[in-house]
Image (cartoon, rainbow, N blue to C red):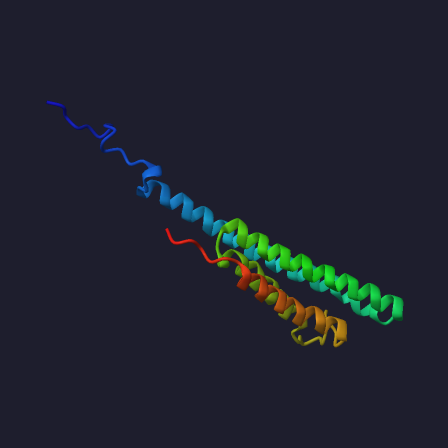
Amino acid sequence: MPTSSPQSPRTAVRPESGGSTGRLPRRALAGAAYTVLTALGLVAGTVGGLASSWLSWLWLTGAAGQGAAAAALVLMLLALFAGCRAAGWGMGTRLGAGLPAGGWIAASFLLVSWSSSGDVVLTAAAINYAFLFGGIAVAVLATALTAPAAPR
């Protein structure tokens, strides 16, 4: 009569069979990835906001500068859209697209917030408003167009 030992294949928990051993690392990895995506959104919003402050300088240089600023703005918004969509595709969820988008939006609002010294990175120039509100629209659109997670 065969005896069942703890090392027996019948009682061993296999990660591929959906046992609890495989769930914790997968969830921890997803949590770490979501944290990194949010941080990347914050960094992209900060760097993009600092770069867009140059757009207002270009905007004041005349027609050629306004054309260059508009082209640079379109490229920045396309990069934001592509980054959020790629994050959502890579994670396979809307949350994967929404977290970097939310990080970008949070960083952008921090750049336009008022401080006691009165310094603001994004000034009241039309091109900066286009960057801020266009970026919010693009981030929301990228999140909305990402397919929801497939049911498991």
